[in-house]
Image (cartoon, rainbow, N blue to C red):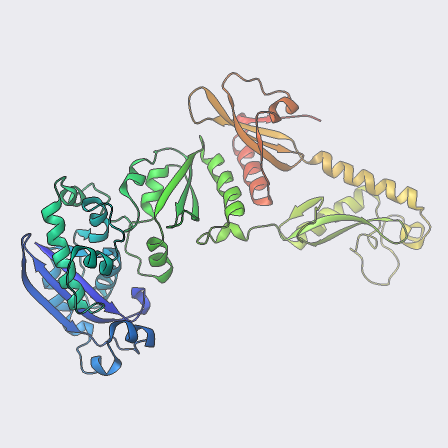
Length: 455
């Protein structure tokens, strides 16, 4: 038995909106055998644009039952049935959420008439309920009202049952089928093509634009995990509605996938990615020449289009590094902005210091240059050589002088002991501190996979 459901609501996501109308048509596989319809008082104002769309006003629902008053009837109608709706995840998320709030746990299989329509009736100009009904000659005098849309969906479902010569409905209901949980606009064929290997995957909207980039140890498993559960939140419901296709890149290792994800998020700036968009180290160590000709070192906030000598998470980390350079190379704490008061210089040279005009520009700048050179030499050059996408290749990531250079794939037999030769086989990518630190931490954990190049 099938329960064909349509609802009207006060908004687009269940955990912050109420239901204003519910209609259910019980279908035995041949015809509708029972009908249920009721207005529902949502306990909140119906927005004006919803009133204009559905025609349901606050006055109409003022004396209607609350959802908890009809929850038992709705639960018993749906329990043990196959839940059918046009864009089923929307209706199911609302019904299940509000039934749960009333103390009922709805568990049932689902069928989406949007997904089934694309398979059983291919080539339609549109699969929205209104346009599909007009194309098929299904009358609906109560569009955007639950009873009218449920009745139209029931007729559509009968047509789908009659034309399902390839058993798409039966396949969708199989226990191992993913059809029931996939977003309504995402073809199952896209999921079938995904590999069980490390890589990066891309969700695309109806126009093909990438709206989300993710990385995975197992691409297929990770992609499918996005569709499990019934989170009724606005962001997730909107996210699922906008997924029309998924593509992927094999990466060989999880580390390559992590790095490529960070690169692709910066390149594509997808709508639904959040965290890696904003990640950058906040401070940097800079060098500049002042008006008197002295080279000066300073820790300052990171700014666009600037190239610091070194980056760090906090002002304290930067100042600690600068203090070590001051001590090791007898630099002036005043010229390095560590000592900011008007007291005498506390540096090693004190009254003979550059800040007093005693130490010459040449002498002081030579010490600063030596400090910068040591800092750069301390930044390592190394490569991570690891598993590839196939058995006859290795993946490779290169850090050059402490900065991410790029990555790629090399032959299993390639002897990567020459830095310049290795770089010919790698693709340069823009890097950032997140990538650098991730690769460096990996090298510490797996020294046996690390090749260090000496300058």
